[in-house]
Image (cartoon, rainbow, N blue to C red):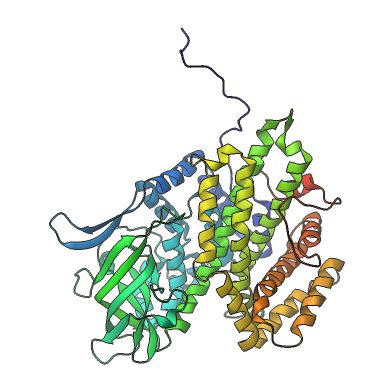
Length: 559
């Protein structure tokens, strides 16, 4: 007997997205790693990509964002504890990311064990971050902040040495206990307050010395932070006012005597996306902290951490863009509309090709930035590139993400708009990387600060752009226009976004000319470097572009 309500068959739906190697299927990522001298890690990255690219792992990502973190301010006896509980899927991803070294891999040279210490560890770590973001991006917040805290903590050598082994440990230890008893730790950051936001100089949180004061000494911190992500980190880097203005402090969850420190969490933020990651409002009630670096140098010291988190914002957005594109291509290859596969319909093919150009550029920009960070301390060219291109890359890649994710969602039609699939979550996730760690306008102001105050780095970066001359007339014209506008020295602030976007697209074009197939570079230059910059929706390609070829040079998902 047939089931009474079995009225239809399911057909013309794409197969489950499963069994994908997130590394080898990503041709721009493979090319970027090769260009950064890190193709020695191909087997390792492919194994990681295969482990992540499964239906089960994507389902775990769904669960981590469905069953949200919960704040428990008191235990059952009534004692103040301020702990956040997470779904097991969140802990699974934290363990995977720590085992892969996403929280520390770029600093493997500091480890005392037999880890690899040759060139390319920074881009390899970046590639893992990029791939993990495609599956579950929220838990990456404490992972990336721990990574970024390592160079900041090195400003206080004695403190760093006491923490180094636990920072570089690849063991995830979620227990709420003092650092001394942990096998591995994570570090968070607290900068913004209600009244200040980006203007951290307006912060009112204060720090009073327990004894003589100064670098490496203990202080009592009182005040608040309006946004402090990942409250279950083992410690935080915080900005607070001393007599010598803003300083930065290392504030653990437990005091020196083993009691719970004076961090009182008020509530968790109800965010648009980034749901699996707990972001909190917190008050400090004479919380113990240790000053890092010289008093009054808080902004300079915390910016070491902030720049590394900006790198990861670009990497995370590029990864999410890649997953959105991969899902769109997968859908189009299997969905039939008007008696033809979507992928075979010229307008759809042009759309996917244009999206492929954007993702390829984002991938190369982000991985080149990661490579420059690895060598910045010993190579002037990489140091200048990192200083110029950190705000540029963070601005441009994170800005391009949400619109591209929307297009991928629309390709899926109504299925893309529902929360059962991954596209809606990607769409909600992408704006956070532009907003956090310095919004778009702040990035443009930072670029203009480089132009005004760090002229050597700025001019070295512009000269690097000029190294792409002589290969494409459209590139040459765009570069000459930019160089002419910059020859006068100062640049009007009102045009800061134009300047940032022009440097971003020129940099991407040069990288693609060096690292991508010729048809990809040629199409990118023709569509992104025309006279007035790019306007309009994705899919508006010139006639000479072979859209199918562009897609095949970008996405290799097999059948």
